[in-house]
Image: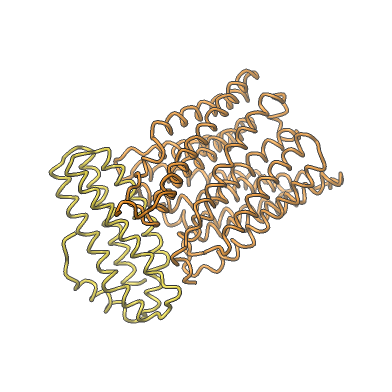
Length: 150
Length: 418
């Protein structure tokens, strides 16, 4: 059991749920509700990325000292891909373009899931290993990070 | 062990694509045999024609797609990265293609030369693949149910291949031991319940909950089923050699597969995503066919009908559903990673309508194949025709996505900013 890994995995699942609820609203063309759900989802997703990029990854890098096989640049590159998709989805949602929205949401879904898989199978266990005994401290610092606009 | 997430973790797109693009050609060859050889020869499991056709499927389609997909999935699922990926893919793909053609041709045309070429090239293809992949899988540090299933798949795969090599050796030397048909039965059981079913389980445990935001398989199914199936297969082998009653073992294996399939269907039916996803049709057809095929087996229906339902209803439909998910995603992912901004979405690489047409044609061909096991040869001709057309469409759909990818990849990613 790891508090850090468990928390991050629970956050992934919460994002999946929020994403599915959002897609349901778009599917039923409840545009106002969809817009509200989208902003909540985008904010949660962005906060998750920020916690990793600003706290978890730098701490891991300073502890692991394995610069030659550092996995964080790939994770950050995929965050950038997902931020771009989220921003494109916002445009299509504003234009109430359902088909285009679902084309993008399908793409985000796949990218997000394979990304989660890599983090859950490898990234988080690696962080746990580098932070033995200090996982709770790292998690607390992550939670203290202020939220920014998505 | 941290190598799995290096910047160049994903193999070049040409690696999985070459395996996927080869499979439909083998499917077309299978359909061609329907027009040339007598119905009885195709559906009699012991006839050389049937053995040839079965291996066109198991090697040319099943192994081809599984090996292609695994090279893509290993780094993502387990962090296991294959070194010299292009060389590895070249060796495995070339030898598997030549081997599948030669071995099947060897049986169909009764040619010892072709059988010899087949056994040498297949030894190379499977030897290289399993040597590298098994080693990597057992080095994986963070093990989950999919990695466990893949490890068992690789062990069972090696056993299936070794048994197959022993059998082909007997054919080449003309020296058949008294255990020949026992080994044939063990080879088949390990192939179906081990090589095919266990890898499908491993993939389903991850893919169904993740890509469809669906319920996880129960922990007991995930953790215990692949191990229990492996144990049952070993038991089946022992019972066979000891001439003990082994039907119970096969029945237990079938029931385990049915339970797995049931949970897969329940999970898909309770998915959270409302969006219509055509690949769900392939997954559902596959899982329902697995149940139908095994119930037919349990109630002693003709083995030719059961084989069609399992091979084409269960396995090939699942493989096609997987391909339709993987190809557009890889095309998008590789382009996006190279810095391209103006990329179609996943639905833009292969049109949903084109996949639907292909699905209808495919299902019709399978229905006619099933009817052909009971009725006259006219049904086999219709099945063959539909099967050829559906596989050409599958190929066209894959090529369309590949060409869209190439067209963008040949442009300058920075052009949008100039």
